[in-house]
Length: 143
Image (cartoon, rainbow, N blue to C red; front, side):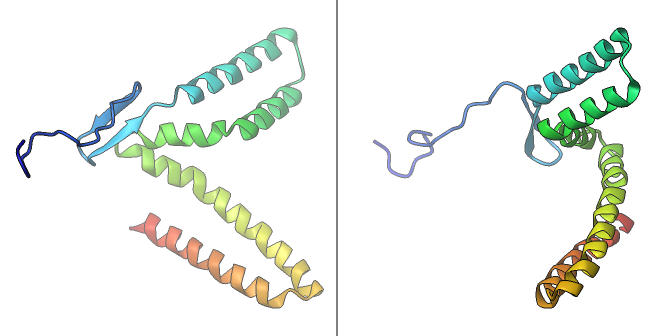
């Protein structure tokens, strides 16, 4: 037996799983989530069946939004968009940015309620964290 040789024995190697491809630019593997493809297929089927049955558009939208939120389909769609070269990460930032600003405005509204109830120290800590995160997002987007 060779000592210290590069025979490859004893090394643990992970097998390449189905749905993974190697990204030579970043040196990482990208995994295609077939679960998300199936979930979006179900969403498209729900929309089609709803229109064929003549259901109200607001009811169809409510069902699709609830189903999408419960199955995290929207996060999966943003993940697929992020895989597009050059344009993908920019699209994800454009879509996710206003959502984060909306959450910040809701947090500001809840901050007024928390101040009235006496949660000043906890509120100060959380607001510093959120403001730092949003400033980092803004600087990262501008860069």
